[in-house]
Image (cartoon, rainbow, N blue to C red; front, side, top):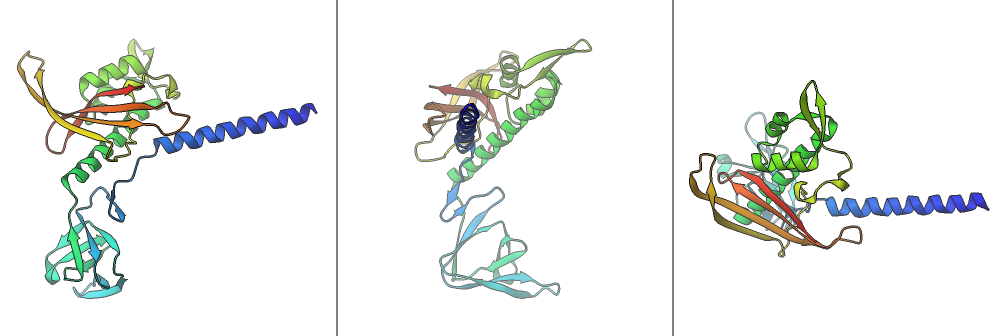
Length: 260
């Protein structure tokens, strides 16, 4: 009887851990940026929609076109490059092309979709950089250098102070990001999992700023917010990331907030 109770208890524990893991995984999986029937990818410049059956071609070694197969009406394909030869060739990957003609429609992604794609890439890479510090202890300067493309120096300093364990190595303070992130201040850990729905708010604005030399000016900022209510394992909350715009393609994370 005791053995049966132990088996039941172990089964319940295993099941609860499995459910928790599945719930956590679904909450942390980045959403796909859909554009029509296809997912928008980094490096993509556009897409073609096949209006009538059209040949997929490759360029042979002697510079001629050869048909690979036939693309069917209604299908959509990502375009990664364009060649002006043969009256126009849209590169759809793996060295294959579709000839520019009336049997297809070429479109470029909207500015907003490209912006969202860039933000998602930034968040995923920034989170990965934070998690690399799990592997050992690092000096503050090492972490500042590692985080520089993704975070402002002020944010990185706050992250180090609020989220990392310390250890003295040869008289120098080293920092380590604990593997159990449940105990980390939520306002310093990046999550790269925005759903990017119509409920996701993206606001561009300007704010006054003061530099290190006390010179006053203005800075361009972006605030991205989203209400999240995934499942019973994650409390409903509003997740917000504020970015500093460096130029048209470069942003740095300034602030993270979770409001429950």
